[in-house]
Every structure is written in C-alpha cells, then in structure tokens.
Amino acid sequence: METVKVNASKAYDVIIGQKTVALLGKKIKDFFGDVKVCIVTDDTVASLHGEKVQGYLNEENLKNKTFVFPHGEKSKSPEVLFELLEFLAENRFSRKDVLVALGGGVTGDLTGLAAAMYMRGMHLIQIPTTLLAMVDSSVGGKTAVNLKAGKNLAGVFNQPELVLCDLQMLLTLPSEYFADGMAEVIKYGVIADKSLFETVKDGDIARNLEKIVARCVSIKRDIVNEDEFDTGKRQLLNFGHTLAHSIEKMSNFEISHGSAVAMGMLIISEIAWKNGFSDERCQDEIIDALLENNLPITCPFKNSELYYAAENDKKSASGRISIIIPEKIGHCKIMNIALAELKELLE
Ligand SMILES: NC(=O)c1ccc[n+]([C@@H]2O[C@H](COP(=O)([O-])OP(=O)(O)OC[C@H]3O[C@@H](n4cnc5c(N)ncnc54)[C@H](O)[C@@H]3O)[C@@H](O)[C@H]2O)c1
Image (cartoon, rainbow, N blue to C red; front, side, top):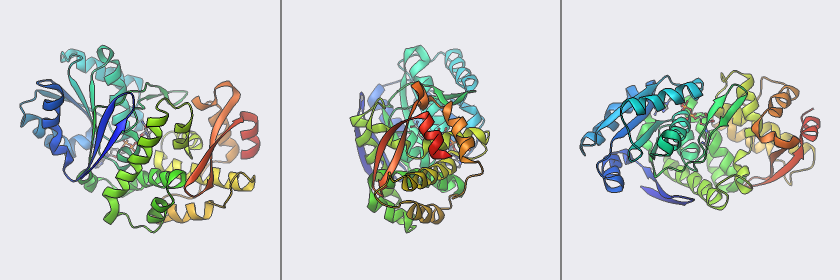
C-alpha cells in the first residue's frame, strides 16, 4: 500500500493498494464521527461494487443512502447534478455529512461539484474505480459538469478529504476503459517522467500497477501543490487535452476521453515537431506507447474541424490559447498563442 500526501488548500491522503476501500467506514468515523453518507455512483458501478462499499459503512453503523445515475459522459450534466442535489435535500443530508464518489471520472467530477454546492459545502471522499480516475480525475480538486457549449464549462475547485484507490476495483473494468486510463499515464510520462514512459511503452503494466498509479498521483500532486488553481504549471496536465475536448465534442461523446487524449497528444506532437517547437521528435515513441496500450493513433476529424471546436473551448478566453508542447519525452513546455496562430498550425 502506498500513500501520497497532497498539500493543496486542503491536505489529504491518496491511499493506493489492494482492498483500500475496506478502510472507508473506519476513516469516515475517525474524520467526521457519526455522520450520514451518500454514495454517488453510476448504474454499472452500483451493480458491481455498490453493495460491498455499503457493507463497509454498515460495519461501522454509518447511516447511508445511494444515489444511482445512468453511466456515461452524458450524465455529467446540470440535470443529473440537480437531481443529486434534490436527492440530498429530500433525504435531509446536512453540511456535516459525507458524499462518497464511487466510480470513474464522470462520477468524481459530478459528485465533487455537488459536494461543493450542497449547503455551500459538505465533505467529499473519492473512490475512483477506473484507472483514469485513479491517476487523474480523483486528485487535484477539479470538478465540473458539461454544458451544451462544451466540456467542463460549469465547475469549481473542490479538494476531497480522502482518496481511496483500490486496485481490485480495476478487475471488473473493461479493457477499453483500462486503455483510456493508460492514455493519461502516457501523458504523465511525456510531461514529467521518461522512465515511467519507458515502462508503459514496454507494456510492463500489471506487475507495476501500484507503482505506476502512485507515480502518476505524485506527479499530479507536485503540480497541484504548486499551482492548484490552474494559472500556470498545472496547464501541463492539459497535454493533448485541448484537441481531445474538441474530438470528444465533435463525436458527440462517442469517442472516449482517453482515446481523444491519445489522438490529441499525437496531433500536437506532430505539429510541435514540424514547426520546430520540440528538441526531439517525440511522435514515433508516443505512437509505440499508444499502440502497446491499445489506444488509437488516427483521428476521424480533420485538423481544421478541430480548430473550430477548440475556438469555443473555455481555454480560448481573450483570443489566446495555451498549448502544451513536448520538448522531449519527460519534458513539456506551455506555449500561449493567438487563436489565429493555432488555426495556422492546425491547417
Ligand atoms: N477532474 C479532473 O481533473 C479530470 C481529469 C481527467 C478526466 N476527467 C473527466 O473524467 C471523465 C472520464 O472518466 P472515466 O473514463 O473514468 O469515465 P466514466 O466515469 O464514464 O467511466 C467509464 C465507464 O467505466 C464504467 N466503470 C467505472 N468503473 C468501473 C469498474 N471498476 N468496473 C466496470 N466498469 C466500470 C463506468 O460505468 C463507465 O461506463 C471525463 O468526464 C473527463 O472530463 C476529469
């Protein structure tokens, strides 16, 4: 078991290992006393893991309810958010009580926002059940729902009080979702850690999973500790993401976040090399890493189409946009450019 300590506006532990979810009831009792707990989860995760998690609360005699919503990105919406808030009110939850986000990034983002909004803030624990949520979305405090105009447009920063990454949860995760998480792991390798990148490129995952998750969380922790509110260094975590958000939106969210990130990383690496922004040619190694981890290396949309979707992205405020450039594997830089320049680069 490994523990990564985050020291943002709130200090909290990310506990990574086998059966860490068994700690849930005891941790809640220690942290908050005799509170009520609302587990928030999607229908798929509810049927696979809901009862077990509820059992850990019952063992400690913690009163609990479960809010279940349909799985998928379309549920990361204002409508489902307000259904959850109404559920909390109907069931008389108070601000002393706890929300437990049990699921992937969709559940974590939605629950994190509800926890910040309900009665101006209740306690939040993240139990990520996808690899993507373990290495990325459950840590760092970004929460959001999507609006019609684009992804993550309505959200707040809200750090959890605890994150429990239970690697056993991943045993039920379909391989395509595991691959989605590997896209984020590859991202961490490219932005901050060549040796992590090499491990992942060689496909040496299962044996090293705990270490890989802990390393990714540590990289994110270091960045978040330095720039919690995303005004500088944190933008590095967006490597591949600006175009990924366009790809997801254009596919009407049929293309998963991880696949879109894979395509976005590759397109931006190619542009960076062609335009002399990179010290080393990174795209061939990135292609190897993506293929080894069952991720796509071609995008169904033209670059020019992606530009128009990116133009509406929240990162394009004031006619400029930050893009993340891989200088070499293990090191990226942030380039703030005019939208017109992005258009040219993409064309
Ligand atoms: N907040 C952040 O910092 C941050 C960072 C990266 C991504 N995100 C967001 O995360 C979301 C993507 O996350 P995701 O890929 O985890 O999506 P997701 O939550 O939709 O989960 C993917 C699918 O896996 C299923 N699932 C989850 N855990 C399972 C398990 N253990 N066994 C079987 N099935 C399981 C879910 O039901 C769902 O159908 C996007 O909305 C993205 O914007 C947020």
